[in-house]
Image (spheres, rainbow, N blue to C red):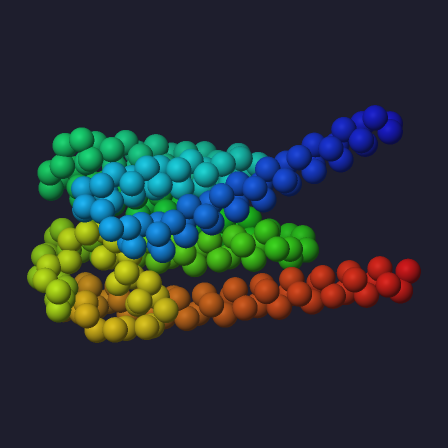
Length: 236
């Protein structure tokens, strides 16, 4: 009896540690995509290669987050595999078809991984720091997903955006515009000019502000729960 309990407790601790470690890695990879890659002083071709490598690691890490729940894992794998295949196919042989399909499957994969994280965040149980980290990861995924959406829109209509610095083509530029829109920063150096691009921008701005309320709520619940636990411990 004691051996079985000890084994279950050890398995739970190991799985929890692995899950938190994987989530931390996932956040680091997202931070590299959003903050580091756009700042690298290298050629566009190399940025694209680095971006594909980091994005591949993000998908693998995102799939691993769903490893404890079969249906979520199956959905994540089904979304990640074609996204990986099309991104590297577009890298090896770039043309209109491979590029637009790569962005479309990448958008789908990011959306599915965000759904996986949301399912983990809002499952039953106490609110802990892992859920807060997951909520932050979803916020970054929202910005990445809209960056893919903007690039798809640009592929379909190159006149959908206007920029003070010339045509916007690189994905790091779409990341920049997406997070400016998500946070409602709006410098005005890149401006949506078509109906579709304006609708995407409005939807992202509203989603970003509403989702920040969710993160704030989760943080408040985590802090409150930690305070109650510490208070209980002191009372004992």
